[in-house]
Image 1 (cartoon, rainbow, N blue to C red):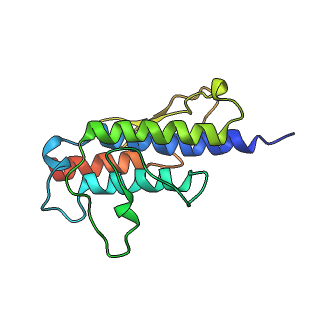
Image 2 (image 1 turned 90 degrees about the vertical axis):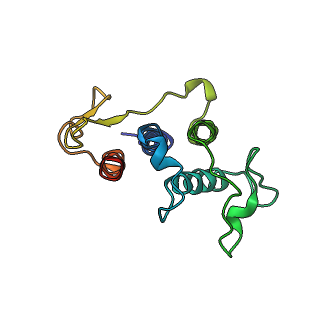
Amino acid sequence: MSLDVRGVLWSQLGGAIDMLENAIRACPPTLWGDRTREPEYWYIVYHTLFFLDYTLADSREGFMPPEPYNLDELDPTGVLPPRVYSQEEMLVYLEHGRHKCASRCTRSRRSVQRPRVVRCDSDGRSWSCASPTCGTCSTTPRNSTCCCARMWILRRAG
């Protein structure tokens, strides 16, 4: 039996990226841009996407995120971005990271397929898996991040 490590990596990392996308899309605009919360929801998303991009870079030397982002996130003094980045901007950055991750984890861009997606019901307690071969996610997901984020959003917005 051979283990396709690249496929496993893409499945896990791609699934995490999908869950982050779910959390971005599920966040109400009033919570997204709320500058009074610590930490700010939008900033957690930006920080995650920046370091996904940075970690997947060919080299740390010469790394530059796409516009409109800069390298302030690497500043040890904790400089925040100059403004709240919109959900739409973060979804574009997420697609950039997804493509970069898929390129790293697969042999050919043409063979890239979206990994299985774990979704939760509105109550945050029920999960379903898009993979026909997965039998464990139907009742107990391996990673319930999307559900945790959704419940966090529902509690804060509600």
